[in-house]
Length: 255
Image: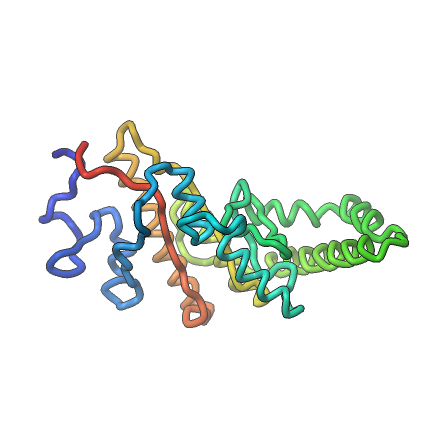
């Protein structure tokens, strides 16, 4: 009764579907033919636990027959061909989403790009890490791990230097989506070795002041996507980038 979006203020997509008015940024891209809406994505006997649902979405397995994630499995397949760069996939998240969990390849996760720069930006700390990784070992398995770790350090160091060469120029919103998409733009513009970037944020569990909170979240999201698309077009990367957005979270139709 009070939270439902009235038809007269919805941003019309067609005669039966519309967006909340806070999604003007996304709606503008839709009108340009740059957004696809995929409805009805689900699985039989939907689980109403948020935690179990996230496990299902991240593993792409309704029966949870996989311990790893769908992106992790994809990167594992790349790694099995011997061509996976240590920064082929990156997570911008405070924890490691299950989607990124793999059997063979460990996808690095950072809360922000500042963490990458801090990790390899301290000369003394990096020197110590390299000395530890380069310590002599008679165990061939240990040597393989050391070589992989040194390769990762080299890649992170190179990535840090590249990140400093580009500053996003679009006007991004100040919220979490704006900050996240701005950092992804920086990665796409400077790191051709990186093929997948996973970003996640919360805040959608809006039991109180739901209308106001949800509107702000959606506006931040829509405006951030619009700024990111404009950035990709400005650096001539738009035709090589696909953004997929999903949310497990939902509400029943009654208040």
